[in-house]
Length: 378
Length: 250
Image 1 (cartoon, each protein chain N blue to C red):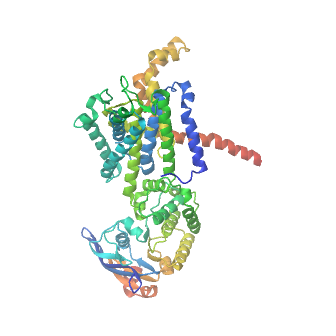
Image 2: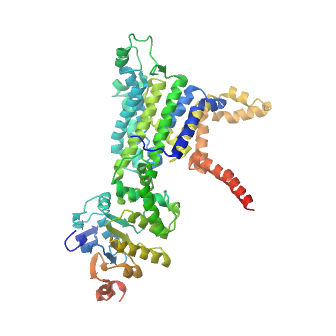
Image 3: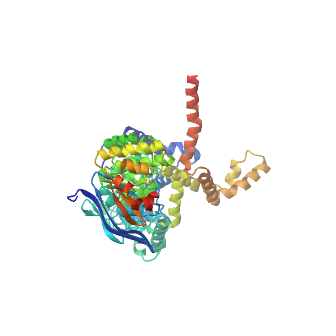
């Protein structure tokens, strides 16, 4: 379904967002985050968080099971690489379809309840999927080893189209372009932009307004003539499809799927991303995802040696003291930094980073503009 | 609708909560285009009766028939789609949305039905819905950009009334629509409700304020301890000895 008309404001938002995303390799380089592997993670988890926000941010239903859809998307994509072709497009399509189907089944049951009961049901389903991936579903998931490519995979379409099989394990491709490094990032970035645009349209559509109404007062929605359950199931499925898309992109950039992607900690991570960035906002979850992935990759790479180099300008005694104080917060302790940051944001900015940015905007820019208008009047 | 112009017929409705008979043998007919007030002391069963009408409660026996169609057992959204809207005793609005969106939501329900998947359609393309909402908001004297959660109780009531009116219901149920309002706001609400009457909308009003009741009602039913003890024109009810004794205090 294509939009009949894109408004000017929507076009501006998408163009600005696209420019920011596509130039990430340039402006993230000075802070050490401009390499493809991390950029791909920014795009993939940004997409995951945007989709999660369609459920949590717009309807208020807190799912603790979205990692299950991430896992299903990854498995579906890897199976597409194994059975059909190394082209990423079918893999992405299958990832979205299977996760959507899975989300419908889980959503149909879980959405019989709301509040904490809904959250527990989704958590139970995700953990069940995680454990099944290690037990009865090992023919599909390959258990603890994870689902990987092998030289014996049939790859029916590739075999038909190519005269001879490539030596060694093939790479994922998009019409001949290998999906590793920067091409992989740009493919993920384009999908992120598309996902952002769809989320923007949803939030400004009548359907989106109904979801916000459900979040605000579901009882009133029922007495206003809305059958809220199909709306909730639709939002859950869309959100699950986003997660599946993110999972399939993980397989695109690294054709391997493991059950750990379905663990509850992965579901919890997307909740943190959304809350950290700003629940219910469009850009907040992307910022939250970026921040968490940055901490995970950059702060975790710091060790005592790096810290000594960083604080080498200080006198020796002070340098040692600072390194001793800071070291528990980096390296393996990066979760501590993230935890402290999360607590500070939740306590002082319940609306996340976006609320912080709004406060700064109100304090400095609006004040200066009002001061300017005041001086004009005088 | 039946031949005698009855749009709502509550037939032999009974509702108990444990040992408490909240409603007993309620028989009530409301004629199309009229305003029917239900009065009675606290705990008489007035709100319970409205809850039965909109599907929030299922009666132990009896039926609610609207426009020839039985509503008993139907879900609230089906009852609303059939043309019944309600203003609640405690305002039920969307506190996280602004006033304009609060009124657009019920318009969407009226236009699109109980479910419609249109995620790629822009709200701005719904120009008609926007204009209609703005007109109604102006009627009730609110600012469309205000966040509804920060409105006063009286303004919330007026907003809820605008939300219900935006659906052009055939039957509007009002549970104390002027509670918490100043005398000035009460009078403007009475004027607004009189204006609706000119459009032919049927209303059932629960109200404690006798000024409102006698300003609006074409017919009044008096409830006491879950039973209708009197039913008639405002003049008949005013002069009824039973009512004087049970409710108006002699």
